[in-house]
Every structure is written in C-alpha cells, then in structure tokens.
Image 1 (spheres, rainbow, N blue to C red):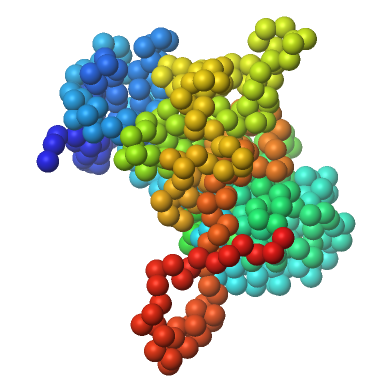
Image 2: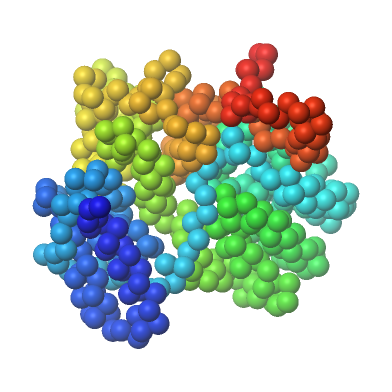
Length: 481
C-alpha cells in the first residue's frame, strides 16, 4: 500500500463539496478550503481538483489553471504533497455542487458495443408512428436536414434523427448499426464513411430548434409542439444508453417543459433567440452537456481530458497517457492539415500552424510542448505513437473491446471538438487515429441479437457443446470485401 495524493485529495474534495454546508460558505471560504487541498508534484507543478469534478494544472508559463487530466505514474502520485498554490484560485474553478452531480455517461463510440436492441426497437416504433405524417404539416424548410433527407420526408423523421445525432457523445457508428439502417429509405445520399464505420458530424441544436421554431412562427403551434414532444420522447428512449444519456437528459430538460407550458418561447420567437431560450432552461447539473453549443474551447478541453483517461491503460505499459494523447492529437492534426508548411508559404501561415495556434490557449504547457515536439520533430519518440500503415503501434493497442470503443469515442469526439474550435472541416473518412483504432474492433463480432443469442444458447445446452466453448468464441473472421 502507498499513499496516492491525487486519489486522497479527490476523495476529500468530493466529501467537502457533497456536504450540504458547502453551498452556505462564502466564496472566499470556498476558495480557501479548496486551496488547502491543492497538490504539488516533485517537478514543482500544482494540481487542483475543482469545478466539474475534474483536475486542473497550473501552467508554469502563462500562470493560468488549465483543465488537465492528472498523471498516472505511481511515483508521481505517491510523491505529490498537499501545498496551497502561490496564486489565487479563480471563481470558475470553485465547485458549485451542481457540477459534481453531472453524470458523464460513457465515452464509447458506437463501433463494437451495439446500441441495445430495446432502444432500437423503441426508436423503430417512433419512426413508424411519425413517418406517414403530411410533409405539408411538417416541412423540412430551409434546415440542414434538406441535405440529408429526400424531399418527401417529413420533419418528424428529421427530428428523431437530429435528436440521435445531438445526444451521441461521439457519432461514429458501425456501418451495419441497426439504428442507422432504419433511416436508409429516407436518406437523399449515402452517409459519410465506409462499410465499416459511418463518420457522422456532431448534431446541431440550432437545426433541431429550427424545426420547432419554424412551425411555431408559421402559426402551426400544434405541429411545433408535436416536434418538441417527439424530440423529448426520442431522448427519453436514448437515455437508457450511457453514450447518449448526458445530452439526452439535457434535451429532455429543454424541450419537455413546452408540453405543459407551450407559451415558454413566445418571447424569443420574434428575435430568433429560441435556441438561447432552450439553453437557459437547462438545469445547472446538466449544463456541461451543452458546452459544445456555447463554449467550444472548454468542450475541446473536456474531450482531450476524456482521451487521456481512455488511454489510461498505457500507464501500465510504461507510457505517459498525457503525452500519448498529445501525440495522437498531433497525428490527427497532421493527417487533416498536413505535417509541414509548404515551401511557398510564409512561416506560420500553414493550416497546421493556424490550427495549433488556436489550440495552444486551451492546453497546459506540458501538453503544448508534447504537441509541438510530435509535430515538428520526426525523430522524437512521440512520433512512435502515430499510426503506421493504418494501424496503431503495438504498444497502444487497447486490451479489450470496451477499452477500444472508449478510445475510439474519445478520439473522435476530440477530433470533432478541435475542428469546431478552429473552423476546420471534419474529414468525412474519419481521423487517422480513429481509423487505426477501428482496426482493433472490426475483427470482433457485433453483439448477438436477443433471439439469436437465446437460440445459440439453447442449441449449446441441448448438444452439450457448451463444455467446449472457449473465451474466443466472439472473434470472427473479416467479412468479404
């Protein structure tokens, strides 16, 4: 047994913030209480467990606190000691209490573990109940969904689709995911990606709200409220899967009140501020789910934090998950924007340089340094973390399907986040790192359908061959190209 400073301080802060008296303390008392639980590591870096129930690192260059996943090396965690920081703790880092109640759900993508059968069947029922409604009553209008769906598709279908995409933490779906195949007959063109993975963009709250607001402004209030109710109903179905739950809960909180108070958004209709009215209804403990809508930089920080956590398995292999995450970020930036500046360009004018410059303010000095080295020095060891030949280096291959799905999800969410932050179009063929992680998953069979699983188990029991079933029975060969 050894003393882990990070685990001890996190446990202590959670206990203090969970005490009902925390909300009664004045701001200065809260800051002082938190400062007494800060840690300093042997390299002189201060760490603080604060807002959003996450760790922050004091930047030794700019003197700011950055949201940053903590080190995992046992020697560093054991040597960390409580020590009040030499700078003030900003109010944004002090927990409110509500933020500690936020359920982060799962960072897994939708490749590997399928969407549960019960959810897909309930979504299918929603589609069947709403697909036949008159398009004149539920037009797509000028929304972005006109680029996705055929002209004769009603906005009710788009509302179900848009809710799924907005609630998904990382919308990278298995190419044969049943939930997507239900929409096949409504699509105007194939979804981006390939037979293995559909690399879909983040859902848009603007687009969802626009479907509802257009009906309300046109005087078709019943149709508008029906769309809002359909979004809430779809989100209620989705929340049973932790990959959807956090944002599904937020969408329910924003849309469901309209069903009992249909006048809530009337003040926002003339000025086009309906989206802001929805966001204002989101309760404090669910606000983190809406970060992509109003704080793209903070959202990038949180997804990068998720990526470091998903890489936690590399610590046992002698690697630093923080440095590995920065290296994988560099690999994606280089794959999308190019690894070097063209000869004809002025220094710092390349797309890569512009993207990196935009990301630097949202990363601590250690991560910035790792990102810079991985991008600029081909001989640096961090380059060894980059995918080669479309595959991850052996040292980064996840140990199991669940870990691989979490790595895929967090890497894809991080990719979409930095693209949104920097104004870079997300690649329709996926990011290089994500594509490499998929290679760790495609050899593993999809989850069996409930009926197939029951029949398989019954056959085994009757034949007695269950005695010879091995732990590798979930591995199948690649399907034909």
